[in-house]
Length: 126
Image (cartoon, rainbow, N blue to C red; front, side):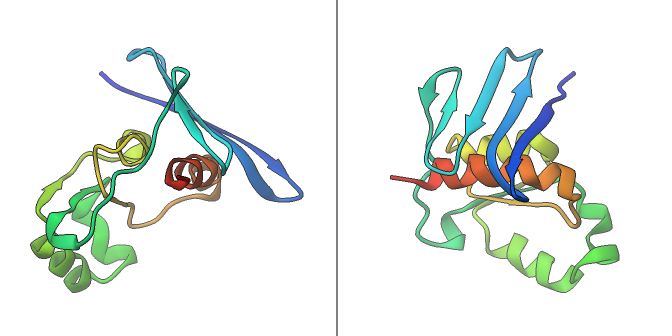
């Protein structure tokens, strides 16, 4: 069983700190738009020069068509090197720590996305 908690700190409506906590895995990921750390160790997204080399993750591929273009999504899946249905906050964790290149949710709530923004931005910083 895996689950995670997303926490965000906003300043004037802008997310400045984001946290993904996976207590069962004993993993704590934090980002501040400048850098990101997993259990105290700096993490970065990995370089990926093309979709044909990308690992694509999603939370709910069965309901893409309810919120997004099913054909567009299927086209993206066909172009990716590897596609897995492994999502929610763990998919974003894999993106920020360099184990995936694309993470897609067909729809995401603001209370989920606010924690992800500073983490992914921080993991993108070089």
